[in-house]
Length: 158
Image 1 (cartoon, rainbow, N blue to C red):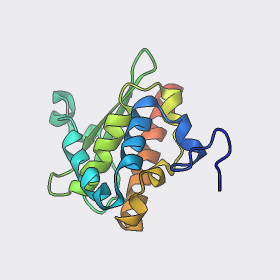
Image 2 (image 1 turned 135 degrees about the vertical axis):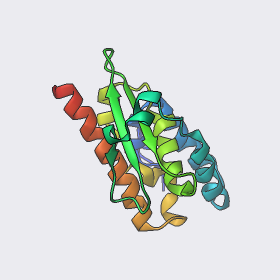
Image 3 (image 1 turned 90 degrees about the vertical axis):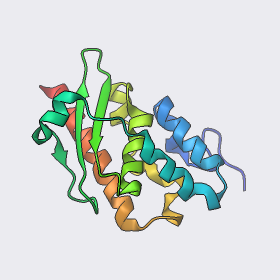
Image 4 (image 1 turned 180 degrees about the vertical axis):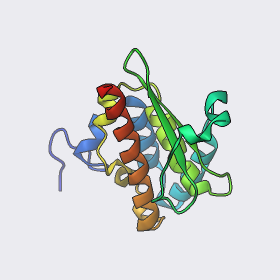
């Protein structure tokens, strides 16, 4: 069966519309042998930058994501150039959850607000994670992205 023009047979049509950084992450997962997908995912747990001092000193400025199986917080800033910056706080003892944060940080930081808002809510399916982690954890990732996008919309509206 051949793919239609404009459709990526591995990740689907929406993956082509991802910001460049996130597309690179999706491509990395698509190129990985299935038996290495979980290992690749866990490598992203180290990609979460430290919180800036103003957030580390005031964690109440971060939004909790209760859908995650572990403690998880995020904060988003849309700068004067309409670029998105997100910070995440998740325990190192929760590498899968931290890996989700690492993927979003690596893939979205510095993207325009429009690019971030255009990310399909289920983009994580293109990573092939459904075969290696539970649906509950995937719902957590969807919730993280959903809250991130909501914060972007709210900041643009204010």
